[in-house]
Image (cartoon, rainbow over all chains, first blue to last red):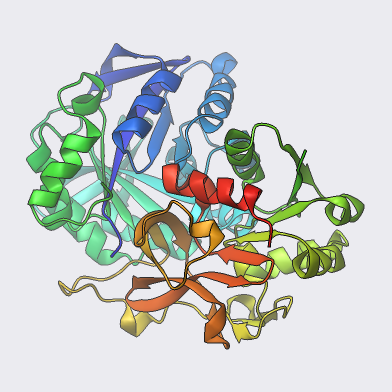
Length: 252
Length: 212
C-alpha cells in the first residue's frame, strides 16, 4: 500500500534555514544541507525547500544548495519560491530538484502551470496554494507570502491548476501557519476531495497528533511541517511511529 | 574500471541518477551522454526518463539514439527507470504512441474506476510516493533488498507485459501492476531507485556489480 508521506519543510533565506510565525518574524534554524541530511537519516519521505530570499541578487544561492543536497541526499526534493518562468523551473530541475513549486507566478499567469507541465511533465509541477478563511466554508487564495488576496476561491483554484497540469498541490492554511494549533482540517478535506492529484497539508502543526489528523480527517496524501522538526521537538521517525499507531501506512 | 552511460535524451533529472550511481560506485566512470557512439562503447547503460512518453520517444529519435538504445538493450547490462521501463514495450496510451517494442506488451493509464482506497477515499493519480515492491523472483538486482521494500514512485501509466515471465516485481495501487521487469541483460523499474534512499542505492549498487 502507498505510504502517507511526511515532508519536512525548510524555509531558506539567503542560504540559511529560517522559520517565521504567520510568514513574518524570521528565526535562524541552521544550515540547509546539514538539516536535509539529518531528515534523510530520520526517514523523511521528501524534503521541501521554500526559497523566501527577498533580494534578487541572492536568488542563485538556492541553486547551489539544491546541488549540494542532491549529491548527498537520495530522496525527492521539492523547491519553491521565486519561480516566475519555465526557465526557472528547468534551472531548479537541472540543479537536482525533482519537483518545483509555484504560487504567486501561477496566480498571475496560470498559463505558466500549463507551459511548465507540458515542458517538464506534470509530476514535476507543484502548485502551492496559500489559503485563508474568509467566511464559514470559504477560503480564498493569497499570494506574496500571504500579503495579497488574489480574489480566488481556493477550491476552484485547486481544480483549475489540476486541469492546467499541476501534479500536486501544496496547501497551506495562512490562518494556521506558525500557530501550532493544527491543520485547517476542513480546508484540507475540501481540497483533497475536490481534486484527483495528491494534496500536501501544511500550516499549523504543533504535535504529532496534528500530523495524523491531517491524513485521517483532512484526507491529505502527505503532511508537511517545519518547526516541530527543526527545533528537535520530534524526529521524523517519531512522527512516523506515532502515525503507525494511528493505523496510518508509513515508510519505516 | 566499469564505464556506465546514463542516456541523455533531454528528459528528466539525469543528474540525480548519475549522482546516485557515483555514490554507490565511486570507482566507476559515470557519463551522462547523448552520443550514440558513447552508448555503444559503454559497459553498462542506464535509460532514465520522466515526463510524457510521446515527448520521450520523439526526443530519442530526434537525437538519433533509438538504435543505440535498442542495441544496448540487446547486449549490455541495461537498467531502465520509469519511462525508461515503459519505452521497452509497445503501445502507450499516453499520446497514443509506440515504444521500442523490445518486449511485447502495452502501457495503459491507471483506470479511473479502480482508483478507490479501502476506506472509500479516492486514490490520486499520479501514483506518487513510497510503495511496496513485491519481488516476483530472486534476481541479482534484488540482492540485499527485503521483499516488499518501499521505493519512490511517480507515474500515471504502468506496463502490462504480455509475457508474465518477465515480471520481476509488482506493486498494488488500486490494482496490482508490474513495477519491475527482468529479461536476460535487461532490468527495468517503474520506481526511481535514485530517489529511494537506501533500498534504491542498494539496487543501483547491485546493477553496477551485475554480470548477466
